[in-house]
Length: 364
Image 1 (cartoon, rainbow, N blue to C red):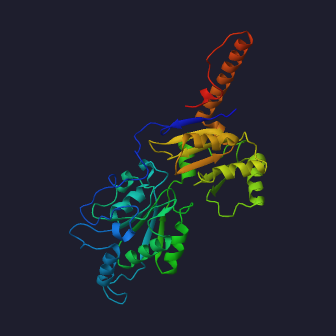
Image 2: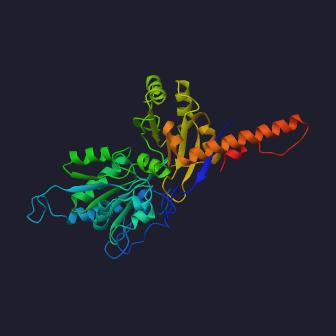
Image 3: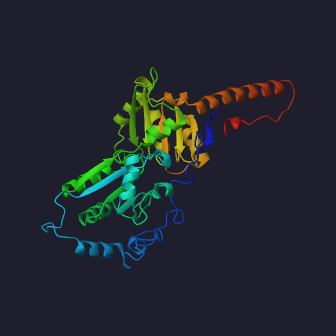
């Protein structure tokens, strides 16, 4: 029997941001120096434009050239003797209240903020009113800028003397490509300071009441990416399945929505019990959060039925059973079995009923 439970909304009280991906209307308006996306399907030079009295009309590249022409040369007495600096700032899993104080302080002092797709408008509101806001988000099948272009923007703004913040969801160094930006900038002689954010695995699981480690259930945890690029060999999949089954390991899959059918199937093929508890969480910690709890063998079908969308985090392991929502699901499953048993007995006695269909009582 397919079992599982679909839930909505953040699991605890308090006001949450309405969406993790800011629409054009939601993004904070700026009187000076605002860059906005003017259309997802246009060339990025068409929709990255400065507005306001501080900047003349033109593309972002035009503005950068003017900045670079006005910047003092490295040998000039007015130039800074210290190294240029870029701040990589993590914003956490989505809830703006999970921002660090340091992240807020840097946003308020930044001249230029380059931000990703999953940064909410509530977080962006912390930026200074005259900060230059540059959207560099990526989603499947649509990259407004390549990673190489982002590298160059960071370097050019920094070299022009601007205070630069690179704003990323979660933690910059956990599947956030922060390491690539660190490496590029350091090779160009730029100092990089990282402000850690609460990574999605920790923030979302904690909000749901799922401890990633728990004495006697899980004594280690493994983060993996669901972007399958050939790294999940037969040996690797067997190792992951064995870790959950025999080594008390919790597996957390980032960006695993598209690869869930293949990954879950291959994990079970390599020895993972189909009854292993799992949960998929869309837009974790946000007001529009949705969750699907189900055994691994049913998770793919349940996620497809619920039509979950990116970003979705997946947690697999026995610690999921400690979540109150999982315990509710188990109680409903028992109740559902009791109803079905009663209906079976009635049918055997010649009575007809209209009780719940198989698995019907298990969805919320």
